[in-house]
Length: 205
Length: 347
Image 1 (cartoon, rainbow over the protein chains, first blue to last red):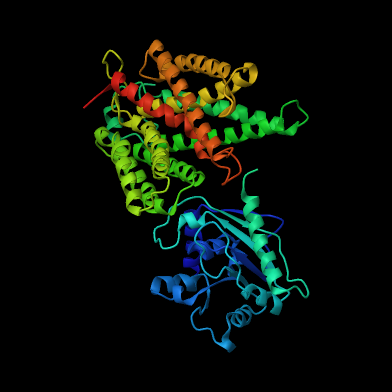
Image 2: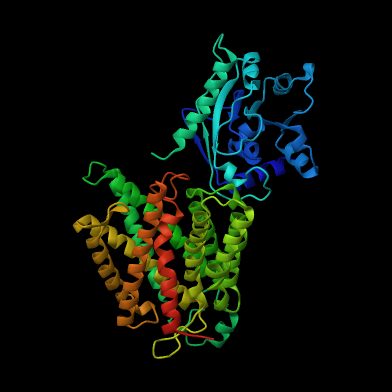
């Protein structure tokens, strides 16, 4: 499992040619929520692979159970990088995804989430779902780190199986928190803007 | 210098037969010279960094340092090639092609409909070209036509099948050009290893010796890099008339002429490393210098069109692989074919 994990990280990095940048931010093993734009199946894997090894061990990506439990290969991959699988289809009241995430991370793990919900078609950033807000509200101590992943939608777009090995760029931004009494919509807009700002910071000067 | 039993990679029969060595040790002299020069240049940068209050522009020094680093890598690739043999050299060039194509396509916008065509460009056509070049028999008839001919047809057809008509011509042309420059053109540099060289009067030269051909490959790369440096230096020193300001603000007619003249001169003085006579060598160097300059201009035009400073901007923030090899890409096919028609036995 550990072997698959290191191997996966290597393949993901080579395939996506990912360059990692931390803007006003540092890798740190404290509990965090990385939230990123979502345009490719590779997103979770590449983001996870771009973290330093010590951080990888305490970081879990949140992903859809219906996708990652289809077939033994996907299941093995999901297990190796310790994915936190969430039901998208039958959400129960007492088993809401946010509850589960909070329970699973305890005081040790960080999370990778994609608040757009599903993969968006192109480079454009979709509206954020409210999960991030509830997560931040229940665990206000978690650092929220915006991440922008560029070009991954070109490496492996929706509906394709074979990747084109273009060079991508992963940018980690400065941490943010839910302000006291901040309304849900405002917070979600602010979070979305944080990711979008990183996209603009991407453009060469 | 009539045999070199001390090279471990010599084939055993050569050791036993102790055949008079063909004139193929030149590559070691060239390599030695280049590594010496690079060492001096490296020492110079260390000094420049230590005394930053000099009059030179720090950005200029930074670029110089990057360029020297790139040259060390090129040297390392060529030395590895000399040590490991023909197939390894071709494979290394294949890797360089793959990487520069990656940079090229990353800089170019593509659409969803191009995905499958791109996949096969990267994992089908690029390796295929190098397999054909590296084939034990010289498959010139195939590797000289497969990309400009059949890959061209394939890419346009594959994009058409994907069913997205928007900017069709533009998209097809972009992929084709990337494949042509980064893969096809560059592959003619290692294809030099396939030639059976002779002098212009028909006397065999360095026959059956891998080192002779490797020396010629080294010579070509050395010339293109010299052409780059001379052109930049002349442009900086006496450059006045900019050739095309919108494409490159620093390339001038003075730099072009000075660069071509200097490269011709230095290239001709290295005639002893090639199957060319002095004057032939001067002509070849001149043509290489002009082609190298054309390569620079074309990639500059592509970069300006895309609004990036370098192909590596997205990746490293400094020049990428393609920025370094553009001159080789243009010079290699020209040099290869001239050598093939005038200085090689065919068949």
